[in-house]
Image 1 (spheres, helix red, strand yellow):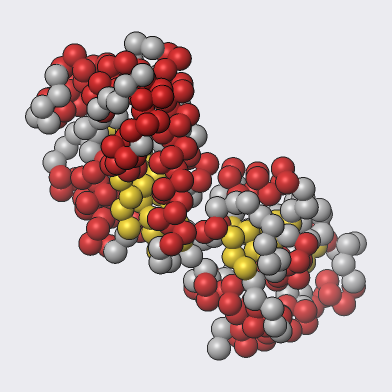
Image 2 (cartoon, rainbow, N blue to C red; image 1 turned 60 degrees about the horizontal axis):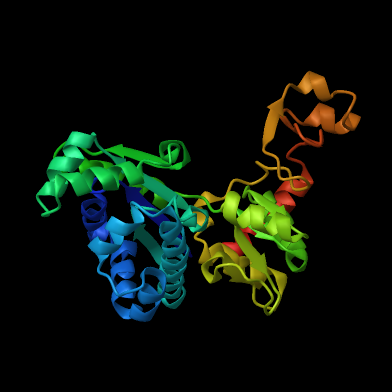
Length: 333
């Protein structure tokens, strides 16, 4: 499994330092800003086409702060080029955690590709003092901060927010806390018509799993709900490769075992905690409230009952539960 984590924030907010602190954890770091610098150096003809002449990064910055039309044209191109390179790195890389550092993750709209986004912030005076040490003029720093603050809802859209004004030890502590949460992430799934049985079993195992038929449902599941797509189709989906898991042909138990192993689900199973029909979490219900809704023998012999608040179906740990539990034991062998 590959997880994509965006690390964003204003100039000198500590994005690079944060990522460096996690290198020892074995994560892969992708610096989107450095990729952008490389693209500017390599795509000189495109720069000339946009600006009339080849310009360096600081010259480009000076122009786009003043010319809104040039800014839009340049950003449409550079963001697309950067994301193409990021996708290539991830697609060709090993399984693991990919931390993508970039100041304009939200502005570029690439947060939809991220499983998590971490936003680092600090007071403006702190940012200015840090940036000045890099040799950037205060006037330019203020322009950059103003530009980067145009989008106002970054904190609300981020999964984690870090106020980075203390020493590096505090930042390291927060980095480790966040990384533990990301490692404990329980994946959610989206199944197409070729994996209907897999979807039902994943729900029985307690995993948030939905089915999709129409393109809008696939887009919502992958980009908004951050799900992994399970399919047995050979091709046909134009979504990021790392978000698609091709379920190999073969016996059903072998297919399920592959899914469990690939996504590291063994220690995250919670049998019958979710409705196998509609995917809603189950809630315990008072026994007296189901008296007229279950068979008499079941009511007399069972002590605990569960209900799906969505489809109103009642569940209990009868013979079907123990039958399924035995199958789970075989899957985990």
